[in-house]
Image 1: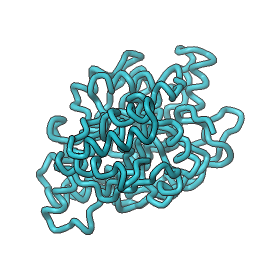
Image 2: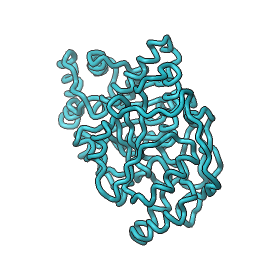
Image 3: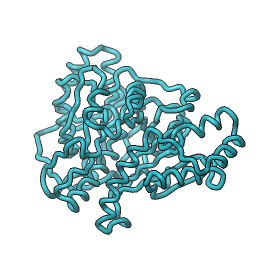
Length: 383
């Protein structure tokens, strides 16, 4: 199986159960059966027939300051399905692309691979607002797009259509968004453009390239589930370099010798830390067993031979992982199918593809030594 960023799904779009929207409605229009247009490689969506008021969480509209929030920046190409529009751009150029977008601005985009994740973030925000009405420690979602501002009307119509609470946009008109991500204090950036993801990682911003697959599984409506690989994702690639250069036996020897030496941090450590900070707000209210955020470590490490160093590192960092799966080289896909995370992060395309084959929304973190073994294709206009 070979994945391109936000690859086209064949057949009809399957129904996904996602977290409740910020207005308390379950699933919303994500479960509408929208027909797949084989000729145009797009989805036929119902036109927006009128502006409808969005309901928000109890306590009303609330805009946290970026420095206080957990900011998740998502590109329009991973939040929504834009294959048809991408085809117009690639085959007919930017002017025809803009004209097409304006002509279709009352037709909302269908949900993309990041959509269930964003809905789950909004569901967590509703729970936080109930417990802490004045707190700015919330998820703040920023839509980042290469699009010209003319396309903003269609994006706004789409957001209203799907009852998303996204008020912060960054439309760069073809320029790199990385500088804006830093200004937003971005904790996580999700994009279909692998080059921009690598650029963000170079600037110290947690980032990943998102993928989708032909098979889609249901995800929790009440709990945000985020799964992480260990080496080169939460941790540095130090140990993976030993394995690649010297093999498994030397890797085990290295881990035994360095059992009490902490691993250095990887690119997604900060995002796990941000999730843990929000989890503790629920724990403080006696809701540890009913926390709407759950985190998972899914690693190819073996527990007895190399797992202790990873666990000691997390403990020394003051980070809790709710569940840790040490697979000792076994395939990750079947375990992820049972977890059903809203998103799974891994540095190796082999594991990303395996997860996608089992229906998991997987995101590639192009970081570390494994990238020498991970040829990564890119798309031409990652919005």
